[in-house]
Length: 609
Image (cartoon, rainbow, N blue to C red):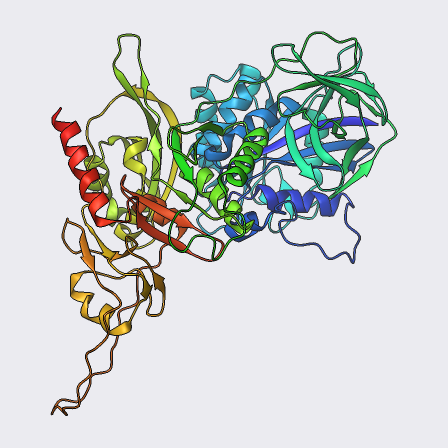
């Protein structure tokens, strides 16, 4: 059967996964009466909750006698490690762009990778049914983007389709016709995307996606570069330097058919398949016939920019809510994650019972912590730290990000002011239609930690921020952190409503009455810039003397609710976030107040030295 391999690449929420749903429906991958979840490819719980694609996935459809393998890629640059590897498997790319928003930074990120690899893009302008759609202007913006990314003349001569994945149609013009549904897109893929390039020689496959299956063990997915593979065949695994990792037999060869995976008796060059039975094979390893000596070249991966320390939870409430609490369990889980996620780097930390995890951004690390807590882990994590570098002359370099903010024009002043305080440089400011503006900044990664919540407050929830790693540049100088101190509990027990009510003039609380607290736990935000120790267990003194004023009912202001991302952005260097399956608590690194004073004195002495 003829083959085509394509990737669908786009910015977050521009409609990739919905488009895949429509392609599967029209190609007959579902029965007429089959119940299928919306965004069928987002199979992970977190993907469904957040409405974003985190893991790359493969599916396939048959159209006019040709099998089309489709790879759905993540839109977030934080998950860019997935994207860079995926593009090795495909020969063409559908670049999906929102008809109103136009190309955004993460479109740019993935497209630059695709163009460098020589893929010929097909541009699909999606969501033309939006009232604020401007499809023709967006096409010009896409052309300008390709030109700035040094696309070849052949790549700049890209075909264009307009349509709405939600309504299920594509056409050569924004007006339609709509009755052909997805057929124009299928036909364009068959005519524009080249069949997979097949090399001569014995079996070779480059591992691209890794997953663990409870029945089959480790499953490695990739495209067969040459030869054929069948179950029970002897193979060996080479790393990128050509060293032998292991030898073994293939237990199963699985191919993607719609939403299912089907076992094959034999798979040939050009097809995308999954191979089971090799316990040590991983991403960027070459699985090949025993006579092969040269590995396939693997795509280099962009470096991580942020790191966090994952530690054992040593608070007084440790072990009360989770069942995976030891340092060995946390270490094994992180090393297992690093095997499949090449954009993560896990190393032993200098501190006892802790691991250093470096990744692309707060979102990627936040998703990892959220996944672990759902698996029953308890751990405490430090504030994200930026990874600095040195240049040839010994000067300090730090990562800079390109930030694009779309917002109502009236809020642009406060956003420019706040970001300039965070050492940002305004690069571009232009209207984007409908009373909105688009601001483009170059901001140090340090300055963006914790900014998302502030942006939403300043823009009344209307600001949309997109960010992308730009380059390493000379250190920009000090950036002021959180301006307020915190309220720290001095006692262990259950918080009392009367005590919280009495403390309200000291600052907003972060806990409800009845919540268990311990000494050193952060229970609220101080209105001033210093930390304050408070007792949240102090009840009302009762006497037998009647007073003229009736007892006032205790009415509490609702506390600040800390989500995981907000907590990670909020804490300072001397604080930790305690994460358990049921709770997210903030605490001081040193729970005892005397230890905190000693640590503060030691820090001041070091700064003076």
